[in-house]
Structure formats: C-alpha cells, structure tokens
Length: 160
Image 1 (cartoon, one colour):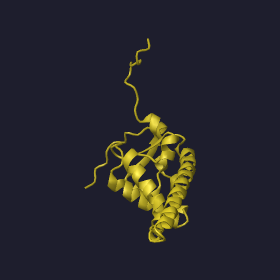
Image 2: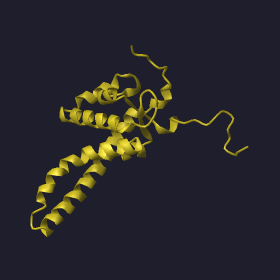
Image 3: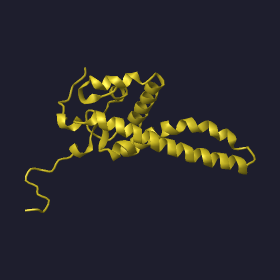
Image 4: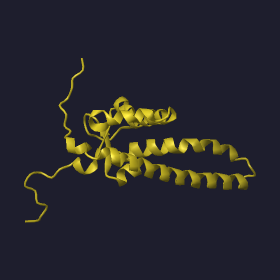
C-alpha cells in the first residue's frame, strides 16, 4: 500500500523555474565544455610526455558531462548552473538534498533523455511542478532555492 504525504510545496516554489532551468542548462553546458577542454589539453600534454602511453585515457573524456552532473547534484543539491540561477534539486517528498542513488538515477535518466533527442524534456511543460521524466523516476523536483526556507513569523533579523 502506498501512502501519499500531504504536499509541503507551494506554487511559488516552482514559479519561473522553467526559464531558469533552460538558462542553467546553458551555463552548465558552457562550464562542462570548459572542463572538457582543460582535461583534454592535460591528457594530450600527458600523452606527449609519456610518448603516447597515456593517450588511451582520452576515452574517458565522454564521461565528463555525466560525472559533472552526477557529482555536483549529489554533493550540492544542484549543478553550478542551477545554483547560479537560484534553483535547488530536492527530494519530492521530504525536500532533502538528493542522495547518491537519486542523483545517479536522475543523471542516467537525463543522459538517456538527451541521447534520444531530448524531446522527453517537454513533459515538464505539462506536469505539476514542471517535473521531467527523469525527476519522476528518481523522486526529485527542481525548486526555487530562495523559497525553501522562510523566516519565522515576527522575526525581524534585528531590524526594528
């Protein structure tokens, strides 16, 4: 039997998320490209130094975007692009940061979505809280980070 917890999410938590996600993806794409270029240069330089013995390490370069997404999501609860645009990835039920398993499932799902034309991302246009398929499968949701915590009523932070 599955029990549904009452939703602790308010509509303002996902307000403007779609536009921010697209821009964040562009920022992450740029950062991933820069990281890839630096690693490529380092591996090529290492290949010259080792007279070509380390050149087989270049086959690891396609893993850079996957590791970037997985590691930043698991460690920080958002990719750098998402964090720069005020987004946070949270568990859809508890609002906790994603665990390693959730981050791995989400990253695999996102990679498969992109490998199959990326059209499945359009699901976010019609779902509640603008969730994509890989977020449904991993149990995650993307929210506005500024709306996650609210000050207690009456708290003035020292300002009278």
